[in-house]
Every structure is written in structure tokens, then in C-alpha cells.
Image (cartoon, rainbow, N blue to C red; front, top):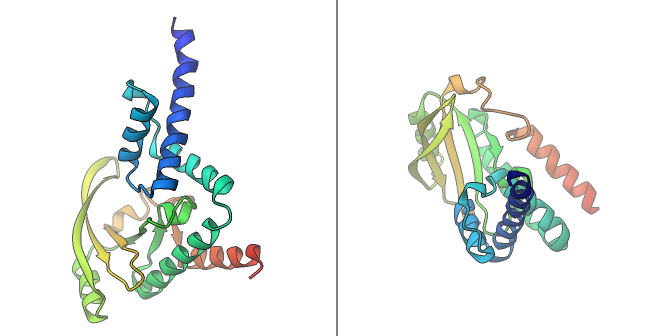
Length: 204
């Protein structure tokens, strides 16, 4: 019996990932959990144990954008990466890393920019923003870090472009703990290279 159900579950998981990705791409949904629930409701999937992961949805989202939004999506992504680079240059003294959808290419018009800093002195980051007259809101993120759930201080920059820049401030000991991987974290130089490659590919 299990042999008959396993392939069906895999297929449903894939269908849910692609449906959630379509909702995020077409409706501007940025919350993976909400997209999953809406996709499951639309497809009549009651077995929530087999909902796709965020990574599976992001992969499906990149595929969807490449197939159906190839005319305008590259320009949107390029603009978001330019804005990310500008924020990273501002924060260069803290050695920022770009993470999330703007890095992996699944970002769209409604997406935010996510940066990670490594510092044990959160106050120094705050004072830097105040000194440079950068409007921001303080907050906290709950995330899995070094094998356990931790509450991480964060800042959200408010800029003229209307795209929020979220900054998670991780402790220094997390820098070499495996939380920073080259495929999920890009430093300033890497983002600059990506933009140059994007421009070359578009013929600009």
C-alpha cells in the first residue's frame, strides 16, 4: 500500500511547490507559509505533512520566472541587487552579506532585501545608522543558529526606493559556524560581480 502512496505524495509535493511559486510570482505574496496554505487549499491537499519546503518553492519560483516572466523579471532583479549593493557599500565597515531571494534570483517586485552582519556590538551598528542619518526601525528575528533557536537583533532600513532592507545582526562566533555558506551568502565584491555579469548578459 505504501508503494502506491509514496509516488502520489511526491507528485502532490511538487504540484504544491509550483502552485505556491505561481501565487508568489503572480500575486506578489512574499510569505512562504501563506503561499503554501493557499496552494494546499486550491489543490485540495489536506495532508500538510507533505507541504514543500521554502527551498523547494524558491526553486520552483526561479523556474516560473525564467519561463513566464523572462521579459521583465531580469530588470526587476537587477534593480533590487543594485539597491542591495548600495546598502552594502553604506555598511561596508561591518562586512555585510546579501542573503535571501535577491541573491538566489527568486525575488520579484514585492520582495525585500535581506542582509546579514556579524558583530557582537549591536549598539555600534545602531550608532552608525544614526550618525549617517539613515531612517530605520529596530526589531528581532527568531532563527535557527548554531543548532538552536535564537533571537537575533535586526534593523529595517527605510529608503527612498520603497524597498525595505532587513539587516540581521549575528554574533561574531556565528561567522565561522557554518551559518555563512557561499551559495546563500554573498559579500560586497560578489554582488558587484553579479551585477556586472547581469549587465554583460543583457548587453548593457
